[in-house]
Length: 268
Ligand SMILES: [Fe+2]
Image (cartoon, rainbow, N blue to C red; front, side, top):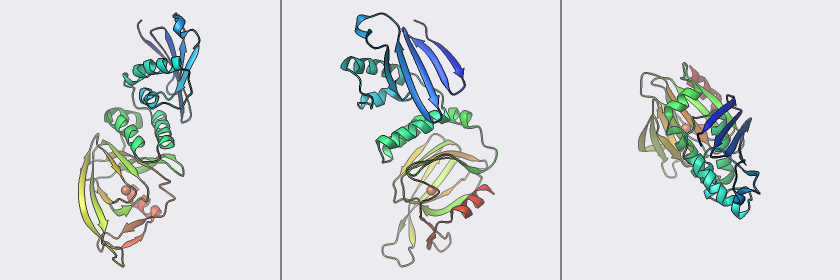
């Protein structure tokens, strides 16, 4: 049967028909659920008028890991089938969906790993992210989500801007959807009384790249290109409230991180 899609509103609800199934995708705020109604024939499916409620994006993977919704054995079989349908179809980046997927990822895996998969999926289509978020016209930090265990930021870095060495005290996943971020990674000099650091490595991140960082990472970041760089940063904590350090860029001496000063410098 031919597939048809009907969007009831831009980001709130979508109904589509696939092989006799009515798939109703509802989103309320950051909550995203996919309702799948069986409306065709087949005695095997007769008892599943309203079969599954699952996250829409990456539903195949969620179900493959066992999912969170208790369904009868037959329902699990259906879930796999529907999951394959969902996984095989690339959907355009959607901000609410992305935030919801990150939220779900952290709920089921407090490490960076599940969230990194969500970011990788988004960055597989960086132009789609750019379209959804809009090409930045000025530098700035825009929070997309903030809670005690998850922060999602949309950043636009001005040309040649450098953030001095700093740590996060939480894991991070960086995804670039336009431009470059050049990272220098630093390590503490063992037992140094001033918390001095030394360079330990570097990584240039280009459009489409995703870079997970552990909670102990210290890095400095430069936008080396003559235009704004656009990135999504996901953090496994409250990025704005956590106490952490930065290092004075000339002497590399440790001091408390000054969030307000950084935001001011970032936006100039
Ligand atoms: Fe950072």
